[in-house]
Length: 446
Ligand code: S3P
Image (cartoon, rainbow, N blue to C red; front, side, top):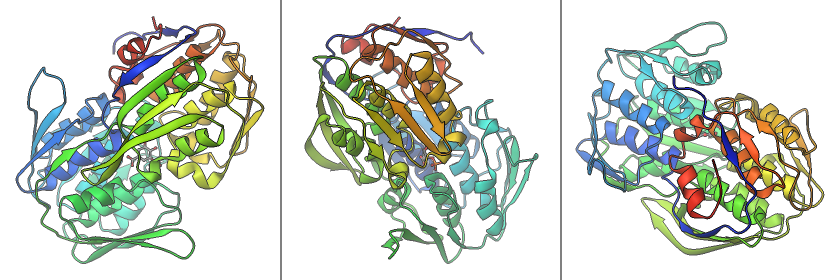
């Protein structure tokens, strides 16, 4: 491992310009996975070339798919995937090391669980601390065996089922990763696999399965939940995928532009899937000036250009029901809340404790280090806004968590004094080019 790389963000005056953020991480993982299960050659444009997705690519190669970047060295991220067909994965000769990538590890566990192969999974210190029992349980119901240490953490082995069973599974927590693992396992099971989600979570798997030719039905239930039904053993056909910009990455320049006085920023080609749009909804309630233009569809996903202008923000109460649609955006929302007038309360954040770090604790510690009053009360987070720039000036621990690192650098751009994060290396997992993009907008990061 290289040495920690501290990074300092200095208070910014006016950020301006038009930029594109890297491809969506969730969609990039799925494009490679479905490409690997399809017959023929899938071309993926705009693939996120962050460490997480590169780990998934490496694991899929070990499982038999051919994956290569086309115009090596050039811009754009065009990748070719030659798939093995549903049911055609090979037993890997090495342990699959997913690094920091929770989505990579969990979805791949699903993919291999219904194939007669044994795979070992590991990851970095953060991933090895995250719960995998939530994935193991439904996969065991389908006939796979999972061998793990106490608490069901990585490293673990999945012994895939030779005769997988389709199941109907009700998600115990709203999680697109659990849903997707079950659906991916269901691809190689006969009959119908069903997932019932009490609250809708991001539906990139459903959209992409349909894009690759799978038969998938989605019903909205009377209680607001959803039932997803997948017909097993489809023949997936190779497809072209154009990956939209990641709204979870766009969130950082969006909030930076709102809190750095005089800013105006346009982000081109950002994914605006309604099940990912909770942050935009919340910022609009806070009084943010956000405009969506040029709405279009790209490989089955809605996309738009987003323009934001700096202005005063008001504290709000964010309901627990909104959490699934902005689950990765609480660190950056906390930064907006620190600059807003009055108090912001975010409810129902229990799932934040099992992300790349305990994000509830990381947000509170980071805000306090930067002179902002914040407290976790059970699963709720309460932040006292400064009605403008908060003090800043502290050193924030990034805790192997890319979004914690990026959020607190943005806080430095909107604070009175610079903010330093102790280690900026995790940013490369999801947002390569973060520093260059912010410099292009006029920020000082060093
Ligand atoms: C993801 C789902 C979410 C999210 C993660 C990506 C996905 O996790 O936090 O960054 O691509 O399915 P959960 O399913 O654990 O909520």
